[in-house]
Image 1: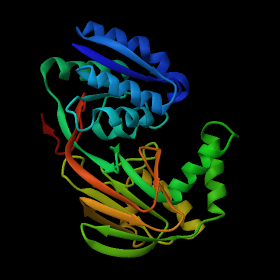
Image 2 (image 1 turned 135 degrees about the horizontal axis):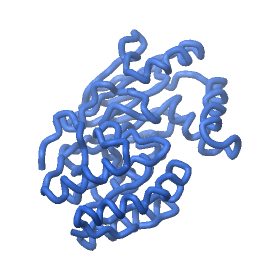
Image 3 (image 1 turned 135 degrees about the vertical axis):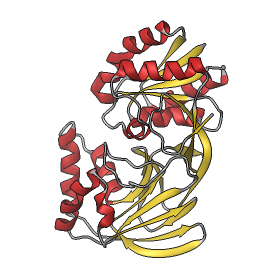
Image 4 (image 1 turned 90 degrees about the vertical axis):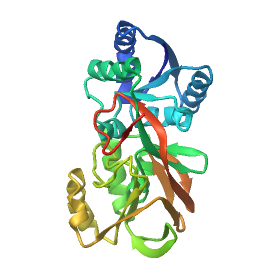
Length: 301
């Protein structure tokens, strides 16, 4: 059984590349035949993964973080070819949502066991235009911070994100966002809007705690106007999802979400998607995964 292994050279500051030999060894031990798809850019990763799927790969295994998984999604979603994850990135929110073992050897053994047993799980996927995503699509303060951090050249690592937060806090103001959720129109001032297929984003922040990737619906979390102090105080509550108890937060559910507003860009799976307006659609059962141990309500394929 041929398996394509997509390895991000940059993910986790080189951790994914360092794990490559371990992943290959475990796959071979399970009787599988792995082929490495080395890539240095997201576009190259997508191209190589698509070619592997077209060539009949039994699965694509993404070794890296959410960016690597996002690249693999573009190739496998809607095809029936399963995706396996080995979490080795800075952000591993999809792996967290699916209950993929954090230890790499255990993750490989779990997905290999599913492949050999012919077992997989069917999950929903989000789509904007021709782009697929699996975790959370967001716009507002958090997307502005991510965009700012990606444009900074100094400092490196987590400090770059912290600096981006400080810079964006100085510019904090709510955006007027119009949402059309399954035909219902709402125009609201929002600090941020998150459309969740799964619960987590940003490296373990539970922005949409009720999101279920197998129910055919998004959870939409809308955070209203906040002062700088209120936003700083709210961020720790994102870690356990208790922010939804705040009167400034509203939660909705919908299968189709239209978002529009001036000067706002959307991000999903930690990757840039498109400036508003966008239409996000939940496509039931579009994604097949192996090695998942927690996917609420996910059906066995």
